[in-house]
Amino acid sequence: MYALVDCNSFFASCEQVFRPDLRGKPVIVLSNNDGCIVARSKEAKQLGIPDLQPYFKIADQLQKAKVHVFSSNYELYGDLSSRVMETLKTFSPNIEIYSIDESFLDLSGHPISTLPGIGHNIRLTVHQHVGLPVGVGMGATKTLAKLASHIAKKSRKCNYVCVLDKPDQWHNVFAKIPVHKIWGIGSRLSRRLSDQKVYSVLDLIQQDPERMRRRYSVNVSRTITELRGTPCYGLDETPETKKQIYSTRSFGVKVSDCLALEQSVSQYAHRACEKLRKEKQLVKTMQVFASSSRFHSHYYSRSVVIPLETPTNDSRVISALARKAIRETVFKPEVPFARAGVGLIEILAESPEQIDAFTARQGEQSKTLMKLLDHINKTKGHVFLANQGIDPFWKMQRNLKSPAYTTKWKELPRVKC
Image 1 (cartoon, one colour):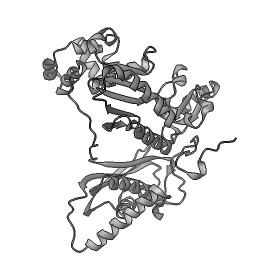
Image 2: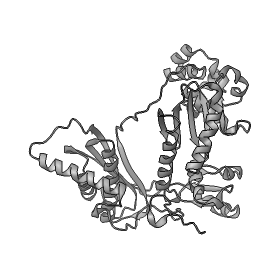
Image 3: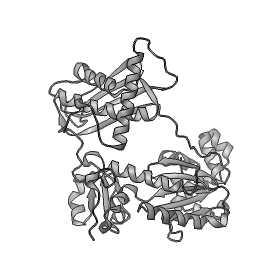
């Protein structure tokens, strides 16, 4: 049996962990530059607040309804996600981290009768250790576990824990669940399936897998097989290495200065290289790009692809090349740039490495320096390239951001006795 553990309204719930006064109250979280609503607490959803709605359009409405609004606090969300995953590993060493707020667990060896108790114990333990509410769905396949997680959230009888140990006994429930709620189906494919009068989970289960494979794809055939209780997918305990890495942001204010644009791509290059080193990879070809807003009367966008003489993951090298590309190719005077970014588009494994005889010593020094840089940033503080700018005016707006409760000493929550 597999379990799918899913944090409820993850971003909004993270904001409530260190603010007990907000529990049970409507909370929403905004996207980059406080643009759109990307997360809503259960209470906010009950008020009918739509998802992905531009914040400025309903700001007055939210204020009247006394909705608590926060900018995205990615540092907090990432840290709490790590704590949740570490807690889940105490229930099973075999775990697949599916997303920032979801994980599959392998519960093989546990009697079926004990699974509901295990599910409720997972919920209790995660709440005690991290303070976040989770739902738990269990099934003989990953697709059934995903479906059980959906039922666990929607059904009051389940109390956030659902075990689909005998799928053929759940047909009455499956008939009420739209087919697009199935993991891997989605809205676009569900519209195509409607041509075959497949509207619900039950409708899909009753289809012939081989005929659906010929008409649609092998993935649809496997989904039907999994919904019937036969596994087609195992746990992916080793995440696949990234084939490309992009670091890009919209600016808090428009940028028309070349130096400021250079600072932005230097910062994005540094972030991309941190991810690259974490993956133990090198980049051979990179891309630098910048554009104005699409709503600007004279829309401008430019990008340049840069092949590297020697594959590297040195932030200094990538930053220098990115700044040069901005200065010599991308920048255009009087254009109000709204966005910029750096992409590492041809990535190689760090080992084995083709060494340049003329720069071998320099390469070893680079590795040592980058390793030290990452160690400092992970354990002691924040070191960055000076050409990123000390306090850039163009940085992303997060005017409603909560404190970094778990990642900055100065912002630790204070308890008054």
